[in-house]
Image (cartoon, rainbow, N blue to C red; front, side, top):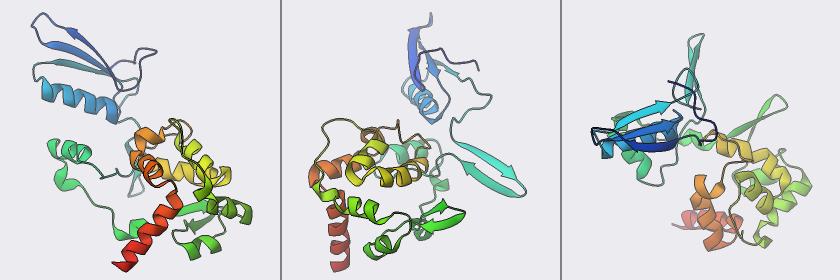
Length: 222
């Protein structure tokens, strides 16, 4: 494998036609996007000549595994959002269906490392009020979220959280929210592309805070 051409986006594909009549495709980047693109091309055109170009010595991009002292540590994203059929269909086509593990109930408990201590993310009203992760001013800004208007264009994850919940909350939560799913940079990852359901919630309901509260009340009632 060779280095990617400068100026070509990761996971980008360039096509041509070989003398045999089958398409010749070069995929730049052997991360999950590039590998998926190559797989889709071969699935749609079995005779295609596909070359994947990667600058690193191994494929996988941000998805990697490290073993040390008898432990295995998964690097990069640790799961995917199973709110559509595309990702699961791809996993099934790759023969990975039986190896998929749904998130355990214990995975609902999230923690942040602050000052050498693991502090739980507050998921309920009482936990939010008592949490030391945010000061009084930052908590007041979160409670003012229903007063914030809807977005008028595409935003990064960090910009979205800062606009709706305040800069302190965005600085605290943006990276943990993004890293587990995409291992990306919240300052450059598009909310609209990576978390379309969150954007749809804002568009349809206006307030994420009130929508979450309404969802909890409905679950409690039914």
